[in-house]
Amino acid sequence: MRIDLHTHSSVSDGTESPAELVATAAAAGLDVVALTDHDTTAGWAAAAAARPAGLTVVPGMELSCSWSAGEGAPVSLHLLAYLFDPLHPAFTAEQARLRAERLSRAELIVRALAADGYPVVWADVLARSGGGVVGRPHVARALVDAGVVASVDEAFASLLHHRSPYYAAKVDTDVLEGIALVRAAGGVPVFAHGLATSRGRVVDDAAIEAMADAGLLGLEVDHPDHRPDQRAHLRVLADRLGLLCTGSSDYHGTNKRTPIAACTTEPDQYAALLAAGTGSPVLTD
View: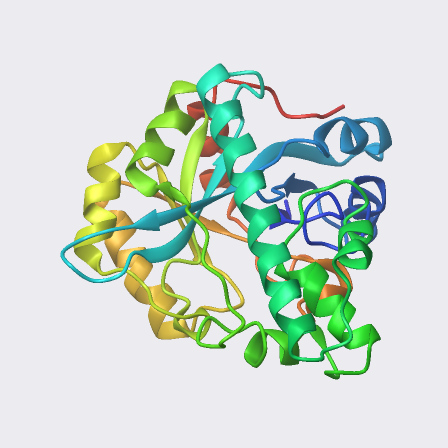
């Protein structure tokens, strides 16, 4: 089995519709793909309707979270959530709050860029989202199309970097609260790309241990942004804490250069994930 448990569609910051995404997954020879758009389940129905025969689709989401410890600034991190009840009241309310945070943050960034003469217009960026979750990748794509930068990666490395004067913060879910919400909704919480230092600050092992104590069930170990030594460290930590180990591409279509199925999950770990989720079923033949 070939299993990719972290992909994004145009419902958040990918470039392929949910239907196109599941077609891409099947064409790449995947047996299982998880749809994990940011802070929304809006793509689940379209992915289900378009699912090719022989492909299992795991309903999921990537939750925007933060970790706070001591007096320093909170560390931004992401929590993958699988197989949860999409109608759970408290969890759906928190998702709506996060989407509003993303929207206001993107507007602040665009207006700051425009004020300094960059050719970006908020109405155009909003239209790019197609009614989905607005994020920095939509701003990045607008900057590419305007000729300001050559690629989405360049936009994130410069004007949209967290150290850029145009960066705007958003209030994310405390990760321990996020874990509790996912578990309450019958879902399986997995810490996404936890040691990806190329993305910015990361948390230490003590933070991951606290997450495990709060109900975290897995670590995303095999990820394109993890070096071999980081993957090895996470495997040892997962074994010590009794956590699942997953692998995935974090596919975003043409917004990133990483192909779908670049990293995958072992079948036994996938089986354990399925056994732990009670909130919604996988979509399969």
